[in-house]
Length: 482
Ligand code: ADP
Ligand code: MG
Ligand code: ZN
Image 1 (cartoon, rainbow, N blue to C red):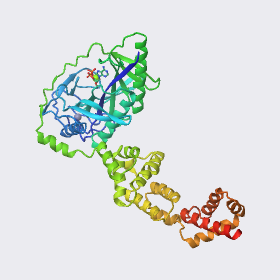
Image 2: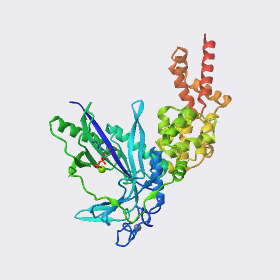
Image 3: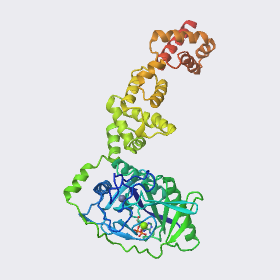
Image 4: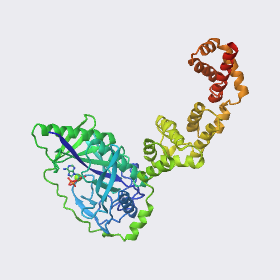
């Protein structure tokens, strides 16, 4: 029997704010352990939480970007459980009245796209961080109380690739909004995947398995693929799927049983008595909606329309807001450049250098105006393309402008016909065999002679002019020979 995978995702994203969710401690996970703690985030008796407004706004912004409704009323609830990373014995979260509900996010699907419904986006606080070292466990409460949003989809994903696309698009949106770094490797974005199978054609969902411990995009893809295979094998043997939680084991490349979920955990949720409910007037939501930046999808549509660049390239340009902004800044500085040429330079030379040197777009030393300047020099024939790439690499390393580097290295292209004519004549005189070959009809000899001219000029000859002169000179010899 053929089975279809059904997948729903729960994503937690740390919100970038100055202070924690319910206290004035700095939200700083990089600080030495337990340096940003206070009675509130340590859960000491008698302390009272205060809501961080910036975190509420960031969550609503995210919901709006995901096309969610923002109900006029929301509240916080206590989720009760006991664990060393949770000093209060409960987590302040949201249960039945989350900040945002009923949204969607489109992901690529073949040539088109498919809509993934977002069930809810709610706000809660992060737990402390446990470090297991040999026989000891250490706790860092700097993370306890950092604002965390949870984004839950309906079970609309159908494959490991879908899940990967969903996460990628979601992270792009979080980064565009500036609400989270979305960095999975650093734990700023964490996700759980719920996976079940059903016979193709069946309308009901099967029993789901929840996968935890997914610390990278690659892990998400591999773990889901593994889980689909594991469940398929069980069903084919006629066994039933148990409702369990598994963890992805990165080293052994398999999912590992963690606990049974057949008896629902009872978190004894109840409204947080120390916090007031939240009411949102429509004007407040409208004001937040005004703050939404141009989002990746819109930007992609505009780039394709306005600049007429290739579809694949548009997707790469808008994947990071920094890159899209850079692209537009280059064009702004030199509006006559071809947008596709600018895109090619950014996606080709610039991306190659960034990955070779392990530098982030944000830290790049070449200002957009400087790249525009270089490309103008290429267009004006001041330097040829080969030199331009060398110059760019040096701009990238030193932060200097193209002019400075071209002057210092004497890379100005030789376009003067007189100067080139002398070099062409020399090349012909020194390579009589190639001349004969060309006259005998071997066109490849022209390439060889061009190579000689380029060598003699250390690559600085204007190739169009040089080729023209070579051809003219050779043709002249053909007529004088015959
Ligand atoms: P739980 O109470 O175990 O957290 P929820 O019903 O809240 O389960 O759903 C959590 C996530 O699991 C959601 O993203 C949801 O879409 C997804 N999900 C629910 N049922 C299934 C299923 N049968 N197969 C795959 N995913 C599912
Ligand atoms: Mg769950
Ligand atoms: Zn605190």
